[in-house]
Length: 371
Image 1 (cartoon, rainbow, N blue to C red):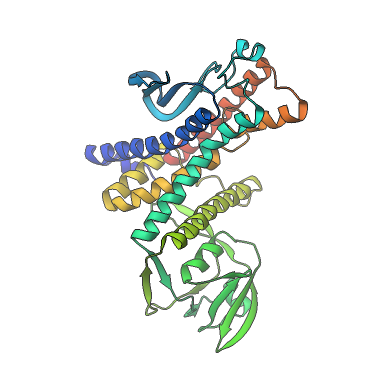
Image 2: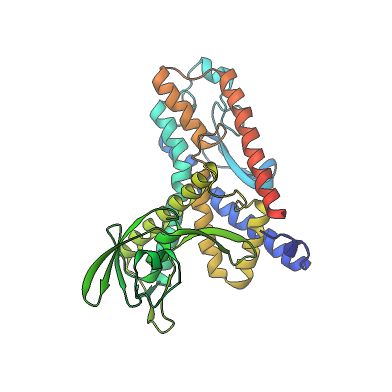
């Protein structure tokens, strides 16, 4: 991610990028925290503060239930503070661990606490599904016949025996309706052998191919590694845009959200095992640059970016890192096995470790933005 273009841009470009980033992030954070908030209310847990942004309040109000809704001066996240919380990371106060009070989060039933914590990431996933479904209904999806027009020499497709004119029908038993379906599966399947059924002159032919990891331009000045088969469609193939009905749009939206999750987890796995570098991770500056470009060039694309980032933030929050939602769920699993919660000192130590990990990841991603 080349940030120099953003820094060397006009004041207006920088302003658009910053405002777009804050707007996109605030919407996603609000949905995430509202998932926690609404589920807590349904579970009888009292919510003291609902904050968009961190730090001192620059404006807010109390609702009829006593919750203080506020906007913090640092717009890089948000939190919900429950009764019995010592801080925004939902660490319990010593008093909350000693005595049970009606409405306190930390003395609520274990399943209620787990449900409240899980509700944040789930709200992000639901939001993405709704956004994608509305887009598929209003704008439609591109449908391109999955017919191979040409094959790259010495590619995985050539090695597997593909021929021009082959019509791809299934990949690993999954029905293929358009060339886009082929691309979505192949890009996340580098090094994975795929079973591909093609129609060759009216006869079904079963082939096996292993997409090769290839570095390509990401369209934003950077590089991304994806799986490539080495096939292409003809420029004259009919492309149509099909608007989906509510049921079909919802199904495809779920599929799209799941695809983003699987692709993200696949990339993380490849980074861990050394198959890919971590240079594709973007921090706030990189996301701001993308948001600014999308807001300027294609406002509709900004809605799609919100859905994409909503999935990413929901997924990241499920990582088993203390301070994140996944870390709390890890504590609850330990509590379920042990029969009692971790002590305040252990939870505070875990929070410090988790905080250090989160800051380290943020700094690393920001370093990627500038290098």
